[in-house]
Length: 634
Image (cartoon, rainbow, N blue to C red; front, side):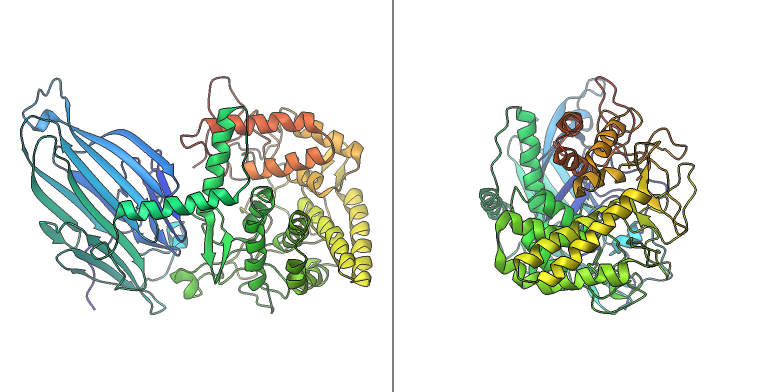
């Protein structure tokens, strides 16, 4: 096999993220380009076309006569469709170089379905014809998404020589597991020249007569996929996706709001959910976020389903079933699988197939199992679907058994984690799973096993809910056991986690049962679970809304009064919308609507500043300044 000459290496350390990237998503495909629609420089770690955890396009740059075009506008009316308008000046075409005028308009229409499709329309507004050319630079590194995120690999598979045809260019790569992955590029209009690095068209561009080019990129393990040459074009595929989006919208709750901006946020969120709702292992599931977590993801999929129950409970039903199919059956130190445990994350790229990473699936999460039980009960409350409960009750029994047998590592009554035994999994296994995400106030790291405060609340809530389900479905003895367990657990939480001088609960207990007296948003989740006494809830509300926690845009993950605080960190001072949403749900559970409203207002204002009217995964915890927008992390 010959080495390829048209692939690109990963570029991360010296490159900044793309400014205002365009992000498109549909089912298992997603695309991230810069604002011009390019994946450039080659191998940029923030950009690419991805299919099943593999980057099937790592260089994608449109070049035209007249130099790099200037950006006029970038729009994304749907999660699967983007339009970019560019222009070239007349400076190279005998125009006034001191006063150049826009003369060539270039429109790029990009659509992601089960492939990437693009149509480029070039229009000449000079009164004479131009000798013109267009180039499309292409390369494929077939990098695993973990590799792009910075995972160092000792070796890689083999790049095969690109295959050229009249209207087709095929890149291929054989992974270490022996599987061959392809990236097929099909051109509707035959290029004047095809090389291993792309294609070039030369043509006469008459005045005011648009010239169109169209192509597509299909990744995967099948080298003979149907293509644009024999199939439908961009307009027909767009019509299919539009119809599917209309059907999805009709299945969802309709919201009417007075502020039009809030309506736009809701509409964008509903469409984004559709983009994240994918086929997986014979069923459907809502995945986590783009780009790094576009995969079935225990905790994230569950919380999203919980928060979307009022919108469309089918999401929750499908997520419950998907995660039940992957429920742990045996003990495995590499994947951290245990009987009854709900998975954390599953991957399908080369590194997972080759078992370089434990995500096959990976079970290193302490909270997905109790949260799955919470979702099962809450879905039943919303739908009244007794058949669903009967179907999943065996899974629920195994999940409860996991809490009793495996969750409590040292027998103290709390559910803890000890971190990855192999070093390839997560050290911290709650939702703040970064290496420094569970600190003492001075930044020191606790010894394992670690009992997170919010996890104890999830377990308490899950046990109460299972007591209700067991009793409803005639399992009275199991119901009594769960209720007694929950009651004792609540007493333990109140006794060991409450910090009177702080007016809140400790972040966690370390391996020596020493409380981490770190003021964090984690404790706010206890309100959602219904653990605190009413007087404690009132003190917590005051503390959560104090200036060191509430920055104006939302509640910080960690108090600004602590030495370890960093507003730009992932978990030690940033603001997470999902975290705030659970806290708001908890505040309203206790009737504390007054402190909940500023949080909702802050998140609404933060979304209003986004170009596409959506909230990011997180943003920096700097204090809100009048007239200024929130600062997003990179």
